[in-house]
Image (tube, rainbow, N blue to C red; front, side, top):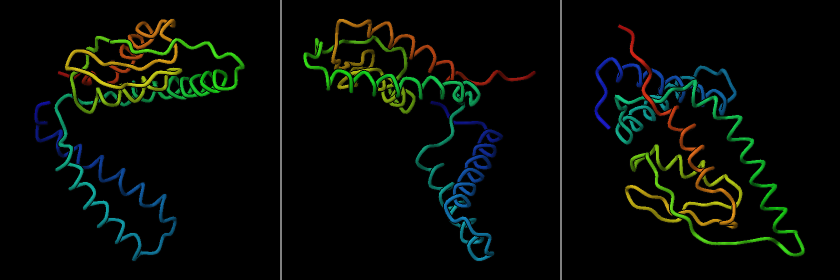
Amino acid sequence: MTAAPDGSLTRALAVRALLYFALWIVVDQSARPANLVFGLLASAAATWASVKLLPPASSGVRLGQLLLLLPRFLWQSLVAGTDVARRAFAPQPRLQPGFIDYPVGLPRGAGRNAFELIASLMPGTVASDGTPDMIEFHCLDTGQAVVEQLAAEERAYARALQPEPRDG
């Protein structure tokens, strides 16, 4: 990732500060002036730490596309939980456990880590190892179309990681 331009840094600082302060208000649930002042200070400290630990990059996230993944994420969570429970309680569970190698297009980093987490919501699938070009997944049933499902998840997730188009 490359460093963000100055305007992007200012925007990132403002967005992060507002989100941290909103979180403070939700957690504190009081409107006492002393608490609000402390919340502003805590938000400023959290913003400073977040920028130091995770500097904004010029390749942003498409928030709208990311929010569109929420229903998919919730549905996958429900399907995965139901599938694993069904297999666990079945008298003769149909399992073909094993490992599959998935050729990933995302570079190593926060985006790829998040993809691995999302992909682990697929029924009976969890990331276990990897190289720069491949993620190894442990699967409860290697007879399923796991690679195809992972490719569909990566395509949906990658759309959210593409930078917003610039005007002008």
